[in-house]
Length: 461
View 1 (cartoon, one colour):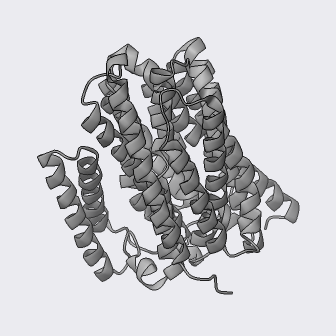
View 2 (view 1 turned 90 degrees about the vertical axis):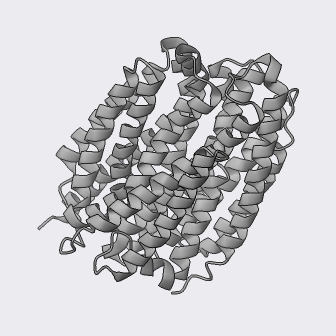
View 3 (view 1 turned 45 degrees about the vertical axis):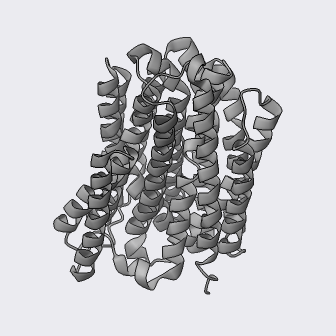
């Protein structure tokens, strides 16, 4: 039997491990964005190919998250977190020593699998380990760690890329991965496996992975004919997946949570729309600042840091507020603020000043911070303990799927207006047109997200 002080110590180690992991995962994703122009020059990659350095990671993560979430509930979330960090660290080293664009994209896909293992278990573990009355504040802390990672990435990523090359980003992340693995082995003594008696649904998992892969890969290559076929096939596959899962005793994804739990369903939908409307922002701005405005990676990072710094501050406050105020109100208000920031970005020109950019990014950061923590609290508080891993994985899948669609919208716009050419002075007008179109589409999506967020209904006691 653990004493109170031992339990407190174990919780402290556990929280530290999760928070460090939550810092470095987004740090990696955002820092890579700032390094894309440098990677493009080294491997002679165009903007569409560069987008796959982000999308390859997102695709493999999104496809694997739901199966790993259910598996974590069965075999134990600590085991899944440990295996995930080991896998992620090895893949990160492969990224660092890539010798071609293809190898880097392939290594990022492998890295995404490790990330899915981490994401499917991390949030569920800290919610299992801490009492319900502290849930909002713990989620706020975790969300803040994510946003601090995002905050450090543009500036630190820009400095590292400029001084030591883009490979240094992956080497630092691999070192952090080793520390996290040591922390889990040494400090996390408990295990959480509330659904250990369930059978793993291999058939449902296979259908889900094939359907999601087809849908997301196809959508990212639209408007081509094969891309349309793959997108349609993926959509049909997901419908078939839902039918199969409703008949299975222990489904990999409990569809009844969506059917019978309004808060769970609409909070996840709000997350999907929010990330679909926002993740591509940094990708487009990184290309804009370095290829259009002519800034170096460090100076571009100094501008881009505005948004995640504001996110980090606001997310911690909104997490605590969500223990007292209905998450529906906070999340919906946050989404509305994001719309205002996106409208400002849709008016960008070649000569837009830095003050204007700082203002738009400040507004976006405030909206993100206000939306994220309360929405996560809403999802995780709407299910019973045995489904926490599934809920965490589902929310993570919504986030990654949204991010993937966001990048696909950005890549599609560049492909339509710029084509397969690298961004040069000659095609900057075409690129700027694609930038404005992307931000208009994002603003419309986010406006729809406000209504999806409001539709979840009031929190019940």
